[in-house]
Structure formats: structure tokens, C-alpha cells
Image 1 (cartoon, rainbow, N blue to C red):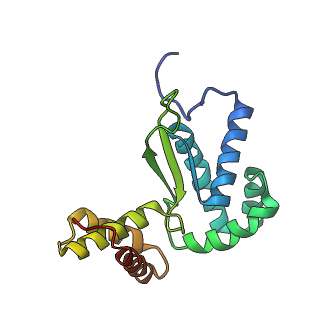
Image 2 (cartoon, helix red, strand yellow):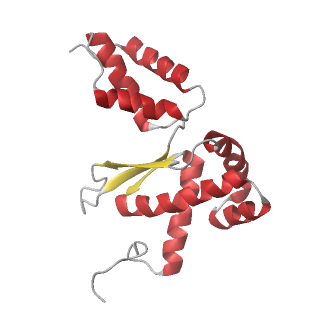
Image 3 (cartoon, helix red, strand yellow):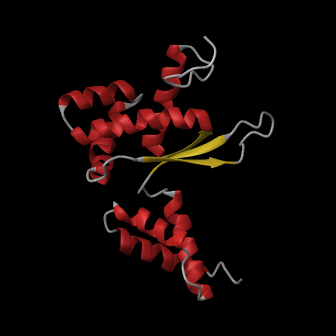
Length: 181
């Protein structure tokens, strides 16, 4: 049947290959906290990563077994998932990952690329970009735009010690004196 609603992206792979690909992407995401891949793969891996982190928040035997079934190297990553990552997202109701579109990483096929990252982590791109915008506004003596103020609110809302960490990042960027406009 042509067209219609599809439950998931098939990614031009059979079922076993697709599941292995997604498990590998999620394992890399938990290990590195940020991965660069194609946009459709990132969106599908995002679904699996959100489920995995929700299981980690439950922290019971069933959740541990499901997480072991998803991760390729559970002996390495289970302590991180059920420790650091669980604690980070314990009070967050959802939205543990973010997909940022980027320029195509391969100039040959021009496939749409994306970065899949864990929010509120050390590699949070929006956190760094918002801190840079605030530092630039302060150095130029400008008022923050509504969008910048919303982003400051978003990146500090669920992060433990978010405001202090944000001001520290802004201070580091101001020391660099990147903007002279």
C-alpha cells in the first residue's frame, strides 16, 4: 500500500540490521553523550534512547534487564546509565535528548546530517551557544532578545546548579573576548 502512516523509519535495512544499527547508535550516545549521524537515523535512535533513559529512571530489575538488552556493552555502560545519567534526569519529565540538524557530513551524497545529544550534559550544544550569545550581548552592552532569554530559561531549568554553571560558562567565554563587533 503506497503512502499512509508508518510506525517507524525502515532506514533501507531489514529488521535485524535496523535494530543492530539503532542499538549501536544508542550505545555510542550513552558512552559519548553526543553522536553525529544522518537525520533519519538520529530521529529513530532518539526514540530508543528516550525509552532507555525512562527505564533507567525506574531503576528496578525489569528496567535493568531491558537496558541490558539494548546496550551492546552493558558491563561498561550500566553503571553510567543507572548512576550519572539517571541522577541527571530524575526530575525531568521527558525530553532527555536533542537532535540538531547540521550541514551534510558527506559531500558526495548530501544526506541530511544531525547531532544527537543528551541535554543538560557536558556536551550540550544549546547550553554553550546560549552562553556565547549572553556573553556577546554583555560585551556589546545590548539587551538580551526574547529568544535568548527563553533559551537561558530552558538550558538552566532542569540542570542541577544550572544558573551558577551557566554564569561560569559565560565568564569563560567573556575571558576569551571573541566578539569585538
